[in-house]
Amino acid sequence: MSEKMKTLTEPFKIKMVEPLKITSEAYRKEALKKAGYNTFLLKSKDVFIDLLTDSGTGAMSDTQWAGMMMGDESYAGAKSWEHLEAVVKELSGMPHILPTHQGRAAERIIYGILGGKDKVFISNTHFDTTRANIEFTGATAIDIVYDEAKNPEIDLPFKGNIHLEKLEKLITEYGRERIGAVVITVTNNSSGGQPVSMANVKALRKICDRYKLFLVIDGCRIAENAYFIKHREEGYANTSCKEIAQEMLRLGDAFVMSAKKDGMVNMGGLLTIKEEALALKCKNLLIISEGFTTYGGLSGRDMEALAIGLTEVFDEDYLHYRIKSTAYLGERLKAKGIPVVWPIGGHAVYVDAKQLYKEIPLNQYPGQSLVCDLYIKGGIRCVEVGSLMFGKYDEQGALIPAVNELVRLAIPRRVYTQSHIDYVLDIFDDILELRNKTTGYKITYEPPFLRHFTAQLEKI
Ligand code: F0G
Image 1: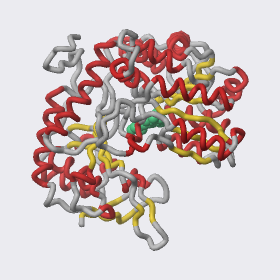
Image 2: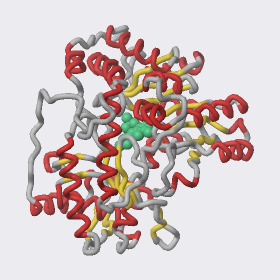
Image 3: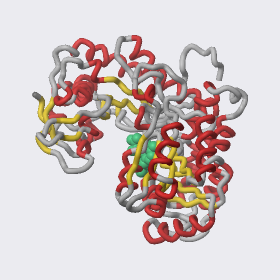
Image 4: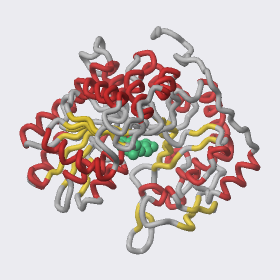
C-alpha cells in the first residue's frame, strides 16, 4: 500500500456481518449499574464498540475459515498439526514445538519447570498471567524497564526495552544460580504496548550467554513489534517484518505465544524450545494437562486456522494498516487534548486518566470513572489499568495507588472500520465536556486476587 495514502483504508472487504445493537444512554446506565460498574460483568450484547481486549477478539480471513473445514481431527499426527508445526518451526527456528490451548497454559508448563521457591525471574514487564504463573511456583518476578518508559509523555522509539544495566546488577545481587529465566515481552503489553528494539534483545542475549541464563521471548505481538523495528530501528528498513521476527526469535531459548493476538485466531497458544532435554520435560507436562503433543488442547481446525493466521499476520499491508489504525485513534485523541501514553503502541491506546480526570482523587479510581463514562456515553467497553487493577492497601487500609492510572482502548484485529473509530473519537468530545463534572467510585466488594475481574463498585 502507498505510504502517501491519506485515508487509512482497511486492506480487506467484509463478507459476513455481525449486527451491533445501538442502545440508549438510559439503558446503558441501568446495564452498568446491574454490572456493579465493572465492565467485565457487562453482557457483550449491551456493548456497541468492544475495546476490552485484542485477545481472541479478531476476525479470521476467508482462507482461515476454509482451513477450518480442512482441519484434521485425528488424535495423533494430524495433517493440521504437521502444517502448524512446519510454520512455527520456520518462524521460531526452534526444533521443539508444543501447542497449548492459550498463552497462560504454555506459561504454566515452562515456568512450572524453570520456577520454584527461591528462584527469581526478571523481565521488562511480566504480563499479569506470566507473573501469576511464576509466583504460583514460589518464585519472585521483577520488572525492569528504563525510567523514561514510566513517563507517559516522553517520546522514545523503544519504550518496551529491558533495563540492561539493572539486569546485570540484579544478577550480581541474587547470583546467577537463582535466576530462573529472563523474560522479554514483545511488545510490552503492560507498559503501553511499547516495542522492544532488536539491539536491546541482542544485548540481552549477550548478557544471558555471559551468565548462562535462560531467555524466554513472550512474543504474542511479535509481528507488531517487528513492524516498529522495520520503521524505527536503523538497518531494518529493507528487511521484511517476518525476517525481523525470525531474527529476534532466534535469540531466545524458548518462545511463549498467546496465539489469540498475532496468531490471528480466537483461541490457541504455543511454546517452542531449543533444547531437547527441557522440551521432553515440557512435553510430559503437556500430555498430563493439555493433551497429546500433536494437539495440546486444540482441535485440528484450530491448528489449521493458526497455521494460516501466522502467515497472514506478516503481510506488510496488513501490518501497516494495523499499526497505523491504532495510531489513528491515539493521534486524534491527543489532538483533541486527551492525554495518551506516547508514542502510541501496537495493539492499544492508553489514556492517562490521572491527567484527564485530575479532580478525582486516586482512591476514587479516576480510571474506572473514565471507563464507566465511556460506556454510558457511547456503549464503548474498555478496561482500567490503574489502581483498581494494581492498587494495594497499607496497614491502615488506605489505598497504595498504582504507578499510573491508565485506561486501555485495545483494538481487535480486522474487526472495526475507520468509522467505528471515528465514533469513538466523537464520544471523547462528550468526555471532554464531562471532565470536571464527573465523580469517582468506591469498591463495595472485592475478591483477594485479581480483583478487577469481579469487583463491585458504587458511584460516589
Ligand atoms: N503474555 C502477554 C504479553 C499477554 O498480553 C497475554 C494476554 C498473555 C501472555 C496470556 O495469554 O490470555 O492467551 O492466556 N493478554 C490478554 C490481554 C489477556 O488482554 O492483554 P492468554
